[in-house]
Image (cartoon, rainbow, N blue to C red):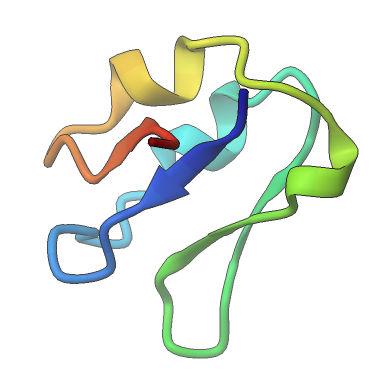
Length: 59
């Protein structure tokens, strides 16, 4: 299962980037988190640490 970012809720805090064990999250040019779904599955930590709850499981 992959994770998705709600761009309207992302506040560019970058906590999810630091916590992603798969190193699948980067900050895009618009300073919104971008998840590379080819790099692995959701470990769940990125979802837990998002201060604005912008990251969630896909689907």
